[in-house]
Every structure is written in C-alpha cells, then in structure tokens.
Image 1: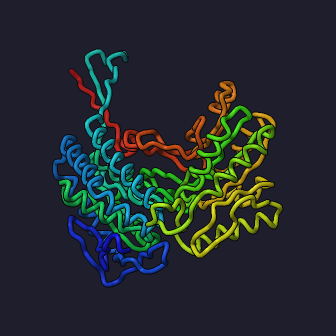
Image 2: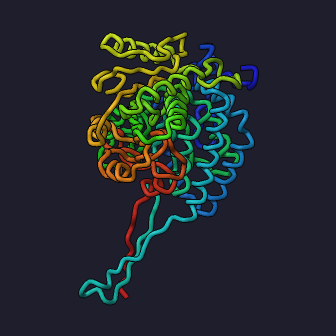
Length: 477
C-alpha cells in the first residue's frame, strides 16, 4: 500500500464524468485483507443514463483513423503508467508485481493491435453479376458497428481482459458500457481516465461498478444494448445467453485445461512450462494447466522434475519482487480449493507437493493417483492445483482430454508429427498448443472455445468481426 496512493472512493464513469454514489463497496488488498479503497455502487438509473449516453455518442462522427489515434495514445499512456497500474494490480488482484507489470505491457499491446485493426476493417466484392438477370449489377459488402456493447469482465486479468473488450469495440466504431468485476474495479476506472486523456469522445466508454448480478440484469433489460461480450463462469454465461434473446452474445467461459506429455518430450523444459502456466496468477486463469496426462514410460522422471520445480516457488506478498505466487482472490476461494483437494485425497488422490493453505494463500499443489471423476479433474479448479495421471496409447489420452464439458485450449508436448496431426483433428478445443502448455496465448491470436467454454473469438481482429455486422450493397447500373 505504501507504493501507491489509492483514492478513498472511486466513482462511476458516465458520459465523461466520474460520479460518486452514497452506497459503496470495499475493494480489499488481497494479501493483507485490509480495505484498500471503496468503489461506487451503480443503481438502475445510472445504467439507463450510461446506455443512453453510449447510444447518443454513436451519432457523433468517429472515423477509423481517429479511433486509431486514440487507441495508440492510450497504449502509450498505459506504458507510461506501468508501475502505478502494476502496483494497483498487485493490491486488488494479489498478482505478484513482476507478473502485474507483464499484464500492463500486454494490455498496451492489445490496445496497439486494436488501433492497427481499426484501419483494416473491410468488406469484399460479391459477384452478383454472375447470376442470370443480374449482368448489369455490382455488389460489395461493408462492415458496420453493432452499436452499444455491454462488456462484462472478470477479476483475474482486470486490465488486459478489459482491453480485449474495449479495444476492438472502439476500433470497430461501437460504444461500450463496461461492467468490471466488483472485487477488481480500480484498474478499469483508471483505464477510463487513460482513454479520456487519449481523446476518446465522451460517451464512447461508460464504466459501471457494483453488483454484477443487478447491473447485469439491468443491462439485459435495456433494449438499446445491441451486443453482450462476457468473460466468466459458464453458469452466468448461460443465463446471459438465455436472457439476451436475439442479440449478439460472445462468451469466453471456463475450462479444465489438459496438457499431454508424450514419451519423446523434452521433460525438463516441459516441466518448467507446465509449472509456470499452471501456477501463474495462483492458477486463476481460464487456460491454466489443470490436468496433465503423462506417458507411462516417462511418468516417474517427469513427476520428479515437476515436484522439484513446483517446490521452488516463493509464496507471499505480491509487492515483493521475489514473490512468484500471491494470494487467491479471496479467503473463500482459497477455502474452496482446499476443500476440493481434501475431498480428492479422501477419494484416493496423493498430494505430492503443496496442499496447504495459509489464509488466502494456497500452496502450489501437485496431485497424483487421481481419476477423471474427481472435482479437481472434472470441474474447473481455478486455483494452483495440477493433477497428474498416466496413459499408454494415443487414442486413450485423446479420449481422456475430450472427456470434459469444456474445450478452450489444450497442450501437447511431442515431436511425433502423426500424433500432432491426429490431435489437431480430434481434440475438441478452440486451440491446441504444441510443445507448450495449454495456457499459451498472445494477444493478436484468435482465442475462444467450444462446448461449455463458450462461443465467439477474442483477439482484436477476430473480436472486431464479432462486433460488426456485414452489410451488402447492390448497384443496379
């Protein structure tokens, strides 16, 4: 807390103004569990005003090159304020300071990519003249903004995932009503300040904080919202899709990411990548490694490496440069993970490393002797827990990976090209990462899942396609 000074209360951001409300809720320092700041709680009238302002802003010209300039300037400002924002991330998320700096850098890149894509939105020629009777016609398509987009973002990556919503939306010419996670709203409000300083026209970005359930319902009731983009739990995503009706919905939901370690893998490098991408942000990432399937021929050697590397992690204060893993988002979530691990042990699982909780800190944990029906394998742990099992045959392990209601990303470590091609065709995910863990992601790639992991794609170019409508223009000459 001594590194940065937080405001006592942060207001809603509506039509270019910050508005404090009488009702507030606390944002905790996730390590100390002390109150770090308070955020305002939006009421229904705030939602209505924000949506009305967002819709009105669409009437003011905001051509692509102007969008490009605003987003590029915002990207630059993010980097200039990297240390301030990283410190706030460490406070309100509990993310280690080194990891927090990386998130700010990625957020700046996401805005830069969005800026570049603002100049590349295009349609295509359509050869209608090839149809009998249309010889004197020509046609082409254009892509137009969908209008007002409601963006609802999670707690775990509260700068970069916000940028993945607002960057493409603004690049495409839309207005955005943003609802950040209640427990990590400060960074989103500071991002609104940055967008304003970068020259974003008033009304193009609105930020509403407070109860996710209430604000979400009020947004769904408002017919001036043209699209919803949501990152969060499958349960909430299903509710949102049901209530949204015929409006566009893009969902990035859960996963219980699997990674396969074949017998020809570089075991030391593989173990290093798996622990990095299983335990970063205390495992609170949709594509964190959760299930690891290791070929039985290399299982013992690989497990020893995995245990050794996991044991080297430093837990503690996210502000400490030496810290690798900070607290989970709340004491309640740490207790839930503890309960899931204890239940798995009661069902026969073995704790190889970790398995201990200290307040909201939960040790990075390796489990073996697991089965696919345990919660730690079947559901999304969203915590620092990796379960390791064995396999013999390629078909067997592909079936194990697919035995899940989720399908966001999976990893595969092998140099066997036949295995890679078979996995590419048969593993049911939105992304297969070869010779890296499931949690690999760069910000310009298409990112999204199948099954209960959602629909639609993130990555600015691909999100812009979701956030625009294709319109055909036909000339009769």
